[in-house]
Length: 175
Ligand code: DAT
Image (cartoon, rainbow, N blue to C red; front, side, top):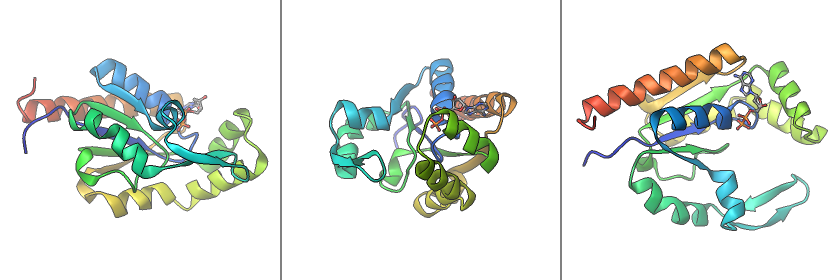
């Protein structure tokens, strides 16, 4: 494998802190931040709107095609609430953020989500759907679950990911 800057996926149930954490890491490490949800909207990588779930129907093939060249260059921090359709080769580290259900419930309520969507996401978190999806889709050695319940944990997660980037960069002679 040729050495390129690392690509990191930050995944987890909506509300676990992916965007906040990812933006802090990307800014401090000089990585390109990619919010897949925003890409889907901006580049119309969807096939319509799902009224029941109040969400766009994402066209996963279109997402992969749209991101391929950007991610292949390395140095990307990708933020998305799903992880099983990205090519495995894209990522060097997969972080799964996790939040206790009562804390998550309150965050999603503050976000103004309808009740059904809050319940669906809290259940998804209780069942550890994203952690399972990450384990099923990537090498066990690169999947790292991190708790994200309060600002201290968020800061510690940011520092941990920054340390991982520094170690990777030095091991691969990229610094
Ligand atoms: P996501 O991108 O996973 O949907 P977010 O980064 O938008 O999550 O965070 C949702 C809200 O919760 C936002 O107001 C910030 C807050 N939040 C997230 N993680 C947190 C944490 N570890 N401690 C305190 N607040 C947090």
